[in-house]
Image 1 (cartoon, rainbow, N blue to C red):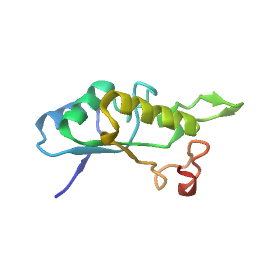
Image 2: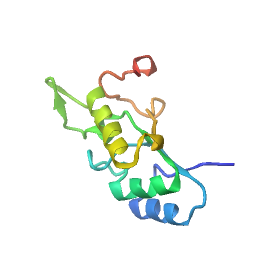
Image 3: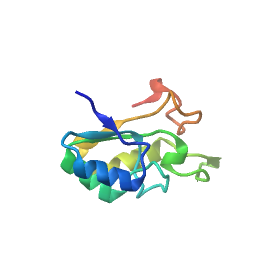
Image 4: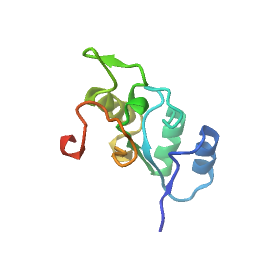
Length: 123
């Protein structure tokens, strides 16, 4: 089998894929659009469809996916582990823990959220 990754698709395509597929899909490196307005993050209505589908959203660690380019905490620009946890908590409250994964995207991003600088720092 194969799992289709819809992290890089437009909102309309997300909904269309979830409407027609008979198999679970995944967002391999996306986060919650309710907490950060990044084009690749997943809106709540799509997360609800994902739950019905049995798929998974893998939370990304890239600061722009987590808090946007101008987030400041502790006098420093960029997201932290706390904001990543906020995304996980939001998705868990909306659709449950069974539909959440970690999609850090370490191999595809140049900046990480502070406190998650590399895989050794993942709690």
